Length: 255
Image 1 (spheres, rainbow, N blue to C red):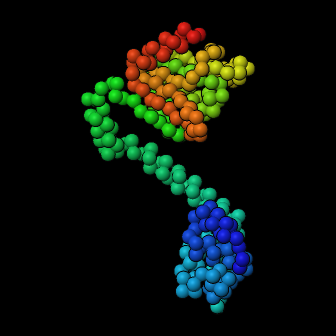
Image 2: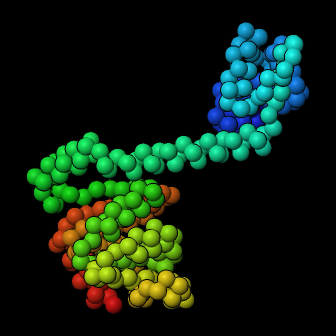
Image 3: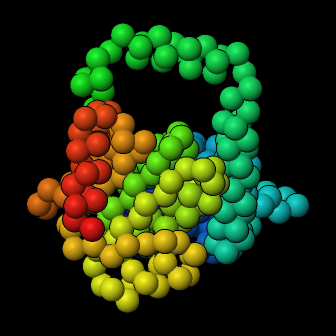
């Protein structure tokens, strides 16, 4: 069996197989039905290991044992394997989500929250700042900030950035208390700004100010920064009433 090593490596990675499992499955696919001995000869996998590998592939749904003697193995078509893997992945993911959701009701979670509160309480406000890297981490922090808002939420960014983050932003903004003041100002293409406002029933101001930042209750803020040659999104989270209030005032003057 002559298959490019590049293909072998990609199949191994995509289907979460080890190198022997990959070679044996490819051998099965190339012949359809084979014995363990034939599989070893075609795949180049040592005969002493072939039986274990075939058993592993059978358990994982990549092969089926044919009834009769000598024992032969039937390859499961890639489409079926892929669909089964997708189903299993979704099931495991949902089980993990359910487990994580239920953690909030446990004593261990309460102890973690208390431990964090006790650790944060003696820290000076000016020391509460952090560097956040990566889109998912930034969106998680942004959601956490908006969820904690009690009086005011200020969003100042570009129309493109708002659209890019709209799935998370619109979801969390739709759940805020009506008494919380929401101020959104967007820079960029005027048509896009108006489209965002009309489509989502939001009061949005057009702005000429550059920059991307989110301010909560004039206490904490998330400032987006974009270093050169940096592909991942980067932000700085700051818990500083003085800085947040100053930036809010600048935004008022700019509008």
